[in-house]
Image (tube, rainbow, N blue to C red; front, top):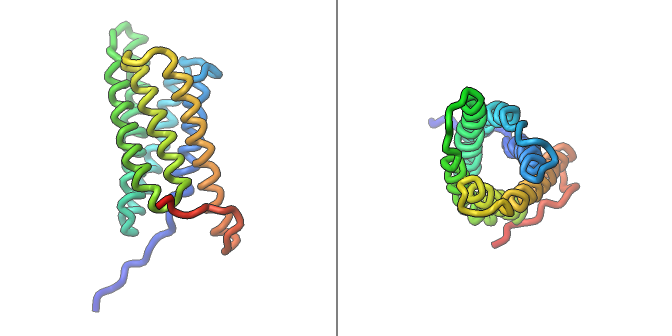
Amino acid sequence: MAQQQEKWIDPTPASLFLVFCITLVLWAAFTGIISMNAMPVIGYYFLTFGVLWLIAAVINFRNGDLLGGAINGVFGVILGLSSGTSLILGTYFASQGVELDTRADGLFLFFVGIIFLIFAFCGAKRLWLFFMLLLALGIGFILLGLGMAGIAGLWAFPIGGWLMFVGGVFSLYTGSAMVVNFSFGRPVLPLGGPLY
């Protein structure tokens, strides 16, 4: 007789709360509220958050959730570990006089934005809130990437930053609704349904 594997609790709310934190810090950086000198610190946020996102991806995959695993995996590796390392090492090498071509980081972020648009399309089948937050982040990453790559003008940074804010607010609400509804054992905060 085959033994049935026990499902683990969905890690999505934890991931969404981290998305809220990191996107609002990016919003502050790209809209000029905090100095871009904060990037090494933000890099450490990315690195530490990347670990949790990777753990969440493993849980999602174990539970048979391909989309959740893919999103958390991309957050964990591409945004967490890769971007965190790039921000920390890039700042270090620049302080040592090594000339860096940061346009590569911009193109990297642009490609991440495209992946997030694909996730938005798929996430709409679950909740329209997932669609909205992934769409905002996808377009935001594309604009920030084009700005960093020197393809778009400086106008791309504040717009991309505000899209990080919008995505962060959707992340906070969605994660909060999931935790509150689970804790009360009934819908308290509406999550809405799929977009299609």
